[in-house]
Image (cartoon, rainbow, N blue to C red; front, top):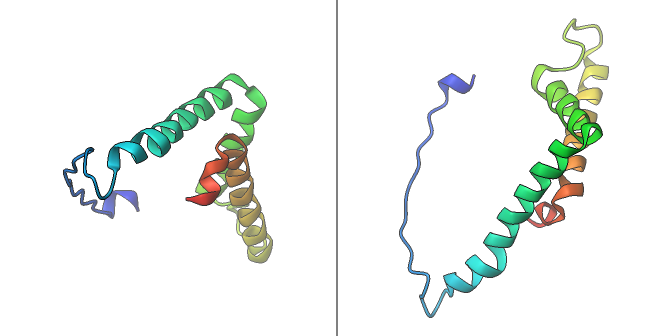
Amino acid sequence: QLDQQQMEITISRICLHDPIYNHQYHWNATLLPRIASFVDAVYSIRRDDGKRYRLLMAMAQCEMGIGSLGTDLLKEGYEMENAKKETWKILWEQCPWLLHC
């Protein structure tokens, strides 16, 4: 699946000192703190075995599909949704600002 998708990246240069958009202020006030918060979240999850295993298990369940034996599709769909919710819950606990993105 992933191999078949093509990705295009567009680069746009901006001036941090633009008087209208004030990119430098937003870079310093929003982007850098969020990047730092994300890095802190990564290290927090890596330090805590419980968080790390919760995240890994939830992501694995999302990635592979739960109960891949095909026993009960309705139950599998419900469990898949729970795994997705658990994944986001863990991420939101570490980076609350993700809720507003």
